[in-house]
Image (cartoon, rainbow, N blue to C red; front, side, top):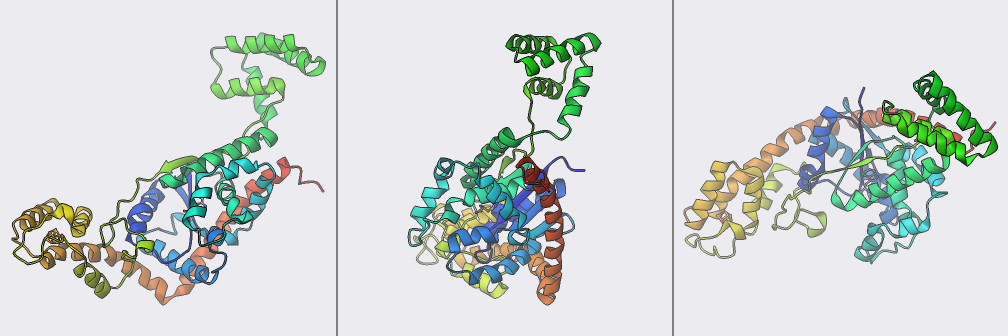
Length: 400
Ligand code: TRP
Ligand code: SF4
């Protein structure tokens, strides 16, 4: 049905704000139109850094899912689930840990960075070191092809690709690889097929390296082979392996430039956020009390939007006409700051209106949210189970 499968996760560490909306959720909402999408609450990931404050997780999980739904993530299109309700993630994490070199984990840039940034916490834990591998398990267990992430997470996707490659190298065998390889042999035409088979047998049974070379040369001359068949026939000579886990692509989301109330990037740690479903009164008040160009002490002092955090919000929310009105009015002291802020207040409220409306039904009836997640977990689990069957078998665990 879909060629691509998109997977992304978010940590439940507090309520979402407009920065999350512009940076991530809008993108999810677009992608669900085009791709098969799985979005999950990364509650185990939250524990890797917040292991000593587990109480925040429970409440944040449901608030966050409501925020997603409010933003327009559609449970009829996307599968929404909670990581810890699909325990297969943990099993894959464990199994992958067997083949993960410690050095690879230590070299992931976020490892040292985060330890330094969150220096008040002891992040010298096994769980924290292994967190990129947990992320790899999250991705590989669904055979996701696309992972939307910000720039800081790209090394995690690269790491995941390396793990997949290493796994396939050690354990890989294409389902019905032999059948496909045999079919490819036939395509060589009867004479060459016979020669190929003879050379292969001589190499495999007698270790005749010359036969291997001849067979490779024979394949090299075949112009009409498809790339896939060529790779199968080369692989088939020596034994051959193929993908069990597929390598995902990072889908780089444009960095959110969503400005906060003080002109810096909107972030909880700067205390400059407007939350996704913040009530109207509070939104108006926050914007009304935003700092402006410090040069405008009196109403009659001219200002410069380039030095004003409110202008950055006009860049997000206002039409070209309004922006011209701001530029002109600010520089000539033709408008006051309170006046200037009105269109921004209106813009934010308008953006939030459908979100508040969508959220209402879920606030009124929390079982709706519980059911959406229960459904999603079940679907996710089905997919995860399929991959785990192949992984267990490849790793020698499906004996009876
Ligand atoms: N590590 C991501 C973050 O901190 C969250 C995450 C966990 C994730 N597993 C994932 C994102 C898998 C994409 C795919 O933001
Ligand atoms: Fe900022 Fe608008 Fe006031 Fe100019 S008029 S300083 S852009 S709030």
